[in-house]
Length: 340
Image (cartoon, rainbow, N blue to C red; front, top):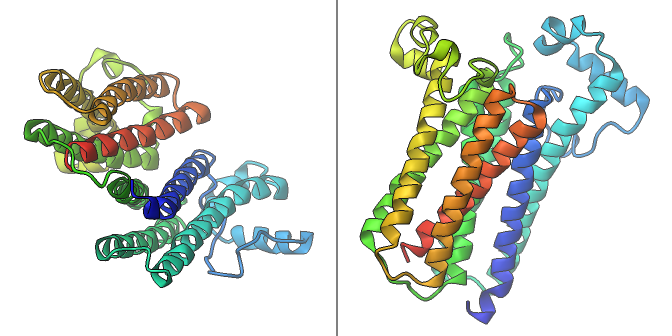
């Protein structure tokens, strides 16, 4: 690491930490059904929550005009106190998003003025800013889908929002790693290929994790290693939708089947990477990356199984999402060290 890059690296890693916090809070927001509590979006005026009881009541009355209250919460003795709880998590999620925007934009301008960024890093940072803006747009695009008729967000839009957050984090981390490790490592192309395929499957698994969350597909077939009735692929997979494509993208059983099956591929590829790496002389960073990856993939797999078996309790569902984040971090680090 070059000394002059230290402040830039700290800035990028601070952004990574904030994105991580945002994903965690986003998970809590989803698992507590808080995502539709704020029924509009303003860049400045809703930066802070209502500051008086009159303003709280006004926000609550506005919330009552939308499907989530009219079709669900109206039957649950839903009070202003309950509303304040779900409002907090959605507001906090958006607040962190604003903080991330400031953390990325202000230092970026400062580093530009001080000429601390080379041309390559500037280009990468512009991509980061674009991804951040896109993530904010996808967030509102997702929320909007639950404010029309169906009191739940589109699972496609949820997966898009979630996956963009993970990709933004991974890319930010990658840019920081470029500065942390300016010297090129010895590349073993066969290991790099396996790592690339593993990352692609992991991202697909994250997308399907968003599908499972959006459809509440973790609340059915709470058995492992087989689905309900001792079946590897349950009959309901083929009965829920008109065709297999819809079953595997919109059916609860089909989406869960894909998610639980992809997990085996992720584990298998990382195990393959580990055993193949033994045949090569790798540097410390590469070895540590692969070892950490192996440990985290088994932790993530175990958490996934437990989350399913216990019917997605909030703490386990959140832990499973956090573990996925750490797994992606290790995957990004390992691939970077096998690529540069």
